[in-house]
Image 1 (cartoon, rainbow, N blue to C red):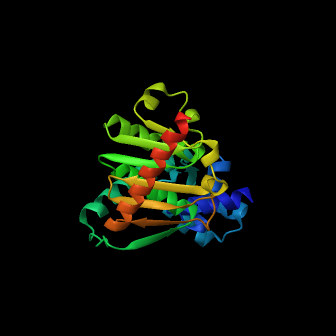
Image 2 (image 1 turned 45 degrees about the horizontal axis):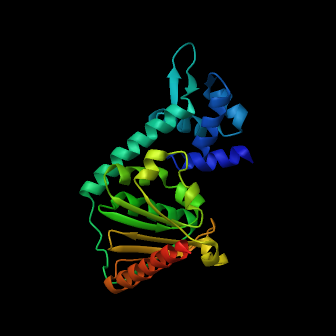
Image 3 (image 1 turned 180 degrees about the vertical axis):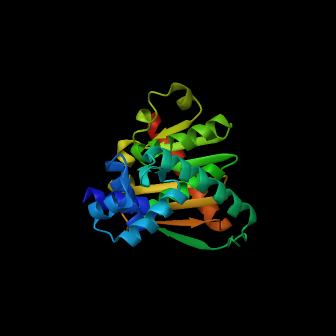
Length: 248
């Protein structure tokens, strides 16, 4: 089961399924000939030699010439680092030279699945220029420490709203000093609030929905001005109510 999962992960790095299986076989052994790889994996020799050539081309294996040609795996960290660097360069080229999408400014986009929602939040935070208002559980907010730290470093206004804000980044005094926190009182902390995620970026973009960490999670993203303004007013009113509750 573990090997099957490793193979699935390696597919994301550009290897084919047989290539991934052969790469794992090489990792488990010091040096192997194509014949030995075929014997250990049960893959036909013709497919093994084609896959080994592809692994060398992808930077996942080295060739040792001697009495017989032998193959050695590049260590996982080195292989992954090299592929990530390569993909980063390819991504930069695509962004620079590819067609630019026409983003509807008046529409609403549904973002489905926990992973896709996190991807959207990541890029929204990276794209923030002036300010963010972010409401979620403390555990969820702490997931974005790197992005929030960068915003604070750039001097952006960062407002975080949570039921346990006193514990967020509790060991990072400098980071906390650059953030405005609002802690939701217990008498305002509804049960369904713990699943809610609300994010406003630069008073122009909104993401809102419920997140439980599953593929069924759904959030709404919009740059529709009226919706953004209504959402801003609702969050502003909530902050005022938190302030009033806190004074009692």
